[in-house]
Image 1 (cartoon, one colour):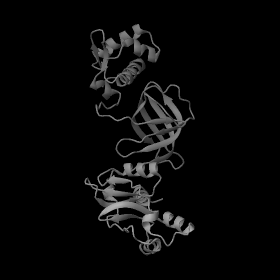
Image 2 (cartoon, rainbow, N blue to C red):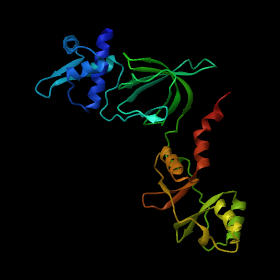
Image 3 (tube, rainbow, N blue to C red):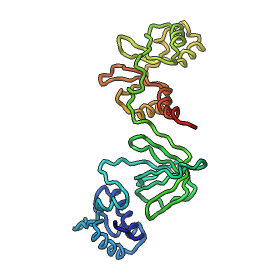
Image 4 (tube, rainbow, N blue to C red):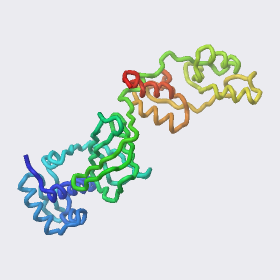
Length: 300
């Protein structure tokens, strides 16, 4: 097992950071020296020893420099992945550029009064101060988001220690896994009174408006209440329905349904297949129930 000196580790971390920012181009020794505030001669000396350890490879030529090897990623506990996706980070509500989260580890989870997390990152966060608020995520797969306050920072190993105040994750499932497939719908020629009775009878708060097997609109309790307030209760559904229909593919991930509902400030989405045929409905309530289903198995 290779044991790095603090300076060697600092050089390697800076090399990997710059290598990712340059999207795979070789990194100049002068650029590393500028980042870690060392003399370029010191960097050259360090690179000689790091090359002999198999952690760095030299690239000759005018555009040459240094590249990290697979062993370098391993010793820094990073993962080398050409398909990596950036995990966002926000400090005091503002996005931070050129920084990517590479690892999240929960600490002290057995303690009843606090929960802390160790965050590994690529990039420069030396300007951060203890006590600043931080939001990390969403992560690519389960859309994990963690928020809290910074309580420690290690600039050599690129580690943040945060006090976690909130943590949420969206299940890795498809919309069709939770969508209501027994569609309750009405037609455009329904009277508004009959639509209200239909909602009361079925216990729903909104429904697609269908004509000849196609969705032509959406009507909700709010639409009916507004119609009554305007003395339009003797009208028909066609007069008050919304013709703006937001759909989502049945195979789309749940997080996309959450995004669409929030972005459009609506309470339901029509679920369609690849031919745009309506296959179900997914509501804000369906999503909340699924996200918090695991709580039902927990013992508090």
